[in-house]
Image 1 (cartoon, rainbow, N blue to C red):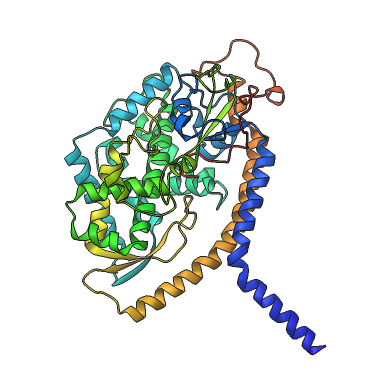
Image 2 (image 1 turned 60 degrees about the vertical axis):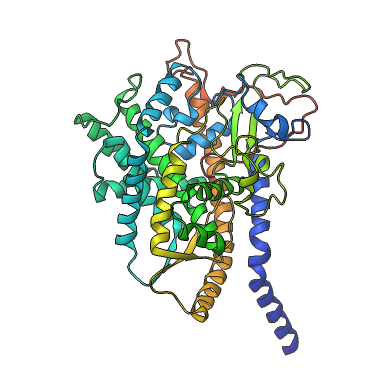
Length: 492
């Protein structure tokens, strides 16, 4: 009997110790099934068996692939995650005069002399690093470390002045809550977001001038939501995620890191590193658009108006490369980003990221400020969604560690990461399922379009009850492989 108990205990212990090897994958698979069941089969994912990578950009850039929110059940989920003010978030505005004005304003805010933008990013990075990190060796989460940098940087782009510490905290709290909800590691906390909204409203009401004029077609509250959503949600989150991916790649490829550190003026090579990082770890998972008219292209089945088109960046970026899973910056010596399957900032014909010029520039500045101070090392997993926020060792360049101590620290970090992954995957399953169900219950996008047209004007006719409102039907192209569009959006 005692032998049986001992065997059972050993088996239970072995099962427990092995959970990092199998449980996270199983939970992710279950999570996707749950999301698929809840969201329904409304999406047509590209590339697929009918529309390959060679026609991907042709469909993505078609003039009729321009609907953004109205008519997709998925929009309810993204509006839920990006609240408040999702109705004026640039990424979710429908095409038309309102979007055009907002997009022009955003480009104005992001404009400036390259030398000034580079210097500002370097200055903010240096200040945050020097104030936050003081020891010989620091264990950090890269996304968390860099988020205050971009909070200060974009505050300066918007208000053309220093960012006080309390305001920086408001921005960071807001951005962290958005990205944690998107990754389903925590539920959203709207009170944290509302605090930033109230701060922005007070500044606008007091007449505090922004660096560029705000969209005149928006009310004051909508202007506050525009600033919050475009710059203090999306911009801060995306730049923090981009830098976490880039620095984690350097931490896990020491030869690449050494070359960048030893040749800080080599913009060409560092640009190749950034291109390859974006290829393997695109910030967008799937961008969804709604076909506002039939899409007819030579040699392809017609895609019906109302279809929800899900453009998969990871799948597209994996096509047409030798050893596509391998990190190889030097492949860009032989390939051109223009001709390759590579769209880190989207396609020019369909809402490209407005920071396509700014982002690589300021990423180079921030990376060099990190590498001049620290050597990076990390044995943790690296996935596109990066839900662990990129744990990493930062070792002072003027105080190197012994190999023995470094090996011990790496081992401890690897074990911690594997077991954290177990609890995190279970939390993502629970929180993600709950938020998807809550978004389907509250239906923010569906309810909005029951009362307003695509330009934000109230409908003069009586709006149907929210319970009877339904999105436009989605008909996949004949013969096109269909699949549930995975949840995506900014950095999900």
